[in-house]
Image (cartoon, rainbow, N blue to C red; front, top):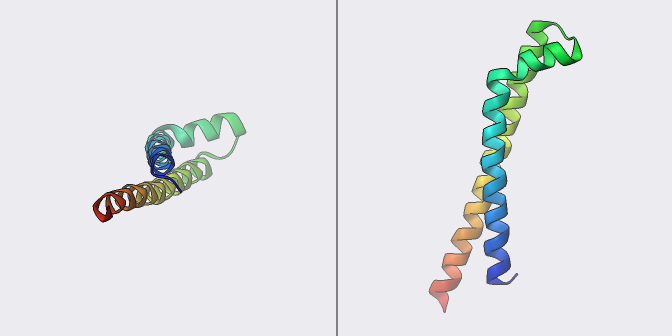
Length: 82
């Protein structure tokens, strides 16, 4: 993969990770209430689903962030080898 493509892909992954972090926070604060009102689920179950969604998005965000950092690190390693 060429250096500009690696940089672009790493930037996209970094932005996607930030989006996952934002959605995780929103899901943590208002997810249960929205699930309760839109899908007519019991409040306790809806809150549990909101927390599970927040945790899943947080893990996905950390995974994407680490992959994006790996692309940046490999790009820096390519520059030092030349």
